[in-house]
Image (cartoon, rainbow, N blue to C red; front, side, top):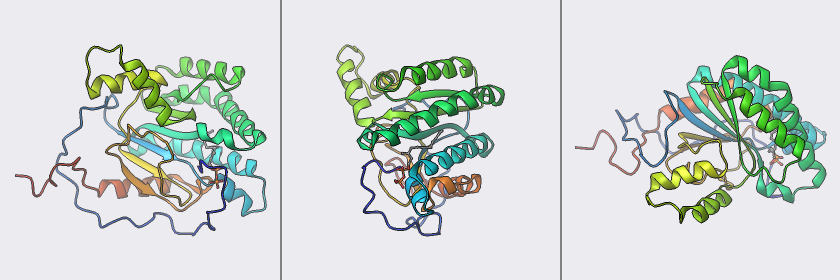
Length: 273
Ligand code: FPP
């Protein structure tokens, strides 16, 4: 997802998938877990995806940008389906940034319509598949009918335990942190953990530490996504545009993640004494 309305600085998408990263180190035996944020219940990873490149995917094929978003929604379905069997317990997808309101109104309302259709079409499937759906982000600026569909989907899927799917809609991490800070003055126990809990309440849908952040579309930036939760996340940047992203690409990113040693500032496992 590009969070500025301008796409001029983007070149054609190269064909290779994962952007080369610095030399990988062997996995740590047992990296210490940060107590800053609530871990997802049970085993599994939290993967967050900035699903970028829909527009360029479409324009490079002579199609309207809306066709890219529609095909992007299909990619989202594939990845949601594949995630639990690849060891993902929580999946957060960036569907609409608060900065995306700067785009033409027709594009934004088209994306909101697509998300509404997605909720209507997929909620029953989510229930069957044990997927709990949450929306993170502001709800006051989306159409009332979408707000209702969000509430209905969240209620219907609340008991899902196989995958926690979080869709970020009208989401800005800075704004979430700012709102949490505004509420925090009322909290008597001042700690990073209690701040994390307030942050989790701000946009609902919890606030759990991200293990792996993937961005498709070739750009390498965080674009106001899960700033607090990504403090110790590993990043994998993929050149493919989101509509072309497959379960095999997710698996490749997870394999790359498995090679990283997560020291969280401590010494690497081999050197720690
Ligand atoms: C990024 O491409 C995508 C978006 C701005 C929003 C739409 C996202 C989806 C359709 C995927 C998730 C959907 C569902 C239903 C969960 P871009 O328009 O920023 O592409 P560009 O950088 O090439 O212009």
